[in-house]
Image: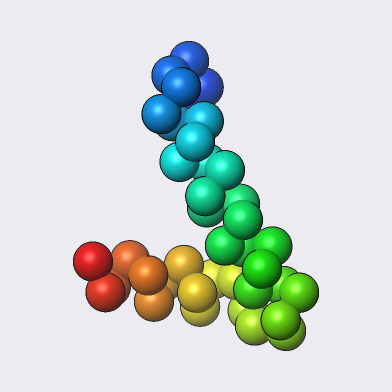
Length: 40
């Protein structure tokens, strides 16, 4: 999805970090992503 561009790789890194942080803290990752998308 983000392959082929440096900024795309960095964006994926940020998203993956948010997802993994949510998992570690016992929060549903999709809720975090959905909440982030609606707050922008």
